[in-house]
Length: 498
Image 1 (cartoon, rainbow, N blue to C red):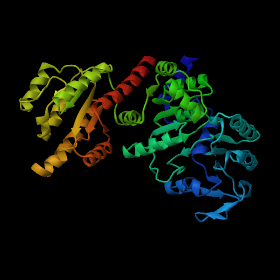
Image 2: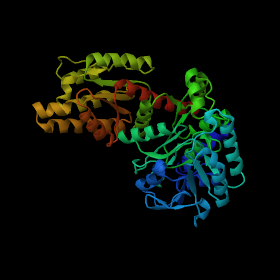
Image 3: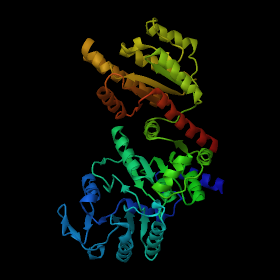
Image 4: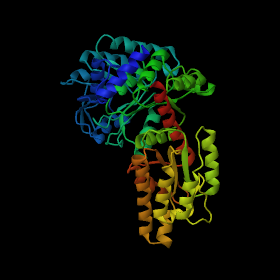
């Protein structure tokens, strides 16, 4: 069976990687397409307290119809309020419910009668409370849904964000879509990922906060995103699962087609206790999760910063050939320390050849430099043509598979104070050109470590300058090495599968 899946995957890639594959039933795929691109939505229980569900789609550019339902109001934000979803003289594709938990069974019955295809419950107060009443309410909602066509997202979650359609649960989310998908049980963490991605120029295709997952669960969304041509990277935050085997099998198939990144919450005993009170899930052993994910090629991360780093390095770089890297630094002490860390995590920092060393020493004044690898050549930064040519020369060696390049934010201020500003402009351009040469001509990853040592404002400017030009920028060389290691591990997994 495993060989059959691999064969199907190869046929799909050879024919057209944009086509829907055989891993997901076409009808189910079409359901999810409608879910993320609804023609009409209803906010049931609309009020000032849940304003974000009404204003979010409008602010994000949603072109469909938005209906408000609240039996106690005539209007809200100049939007007419209906007494019930049954009073709306239109089909409703997607509904968000914000009423208290005890009233949700009645709302669910009306949605099923109306033929609403998907109902998302923002409301909390279910199994995550640990009470029998909370568990009973969940089962009642599911039982009612099964009487019709309605599917459930949640309860106890934020819902869906799809910038392409404008569906959003918060004003201020970016309108421009990107290639990254994120699925999470946590609502607030989902918002943090979106905002952090926006600050670092990462765009999203689809995002789902799915909470207690009494119906639609993580594997359902992963299956769809595996076949979604708009999604290039799948990432997910998981606290627990009701069907570990299905999740494992789904992730195993997904990773054969796209990078899959898992952020597992509750990997310690104390964290598992927090999970049970957050989404009512069983967290499971952290070591078992870690081993299982590694076995099937899924990348395991533990925090938000490394998640965004990994997105950037995947999106902006070719696949690495191996684990041998070039480190270019402005500080001798730091370059030594970062070499130690890179080697300890399983990367290699090989010495440059004698010929390359001699050529570099002809280009750069010999005092205060090191040309072995790491390259500690601060003087070359002040000769903008030199730094670009030195890095290109060293990166071209056969025993170099990737480059980590340290950039300092203070160069801009230095140029204004002591030099002609054109020097700084030329420096930026030469580094950008060197990065493009290494990535496109040599086919090797190039990751910049931007250290905010002098001015956070300058660092933000430079980070945006390089990131918007397709260069991965992370805050430290250690984080750059960690992110590169992840794309190396994924490539090694694919090579092993072949």
